[in-house]
Amino acid sequence: MTKTQIIEALKQMTAEDRLDIIEAISRMMREEIEERRQRKAEKKLSLVQAAEVMRPYYTQGSELTEFTDLDPEDFYDYEDYA
Image (cartoon, rainbow, N blue to C red):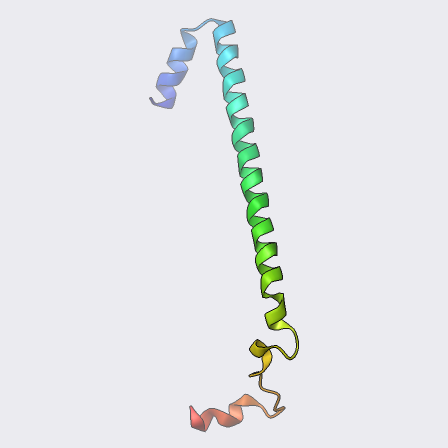
């Protein structure tokens, strides 16, 4: 149904029926907004949990940081080896 058809159908209804429809649509929109808010909060929480799981791997002295270049010499000096 197109927007124009919906508007024409609403014109055929009583004011009370139109008000009932507005209230139902408003309720649906509030529920949809709340669902989006909850999904966003869950996603944020899962990212925080993932970061906490990975934290030990990034602490100084961990296996992941063992291979960092501790040599203060600039990297561009090695361009002949690439």
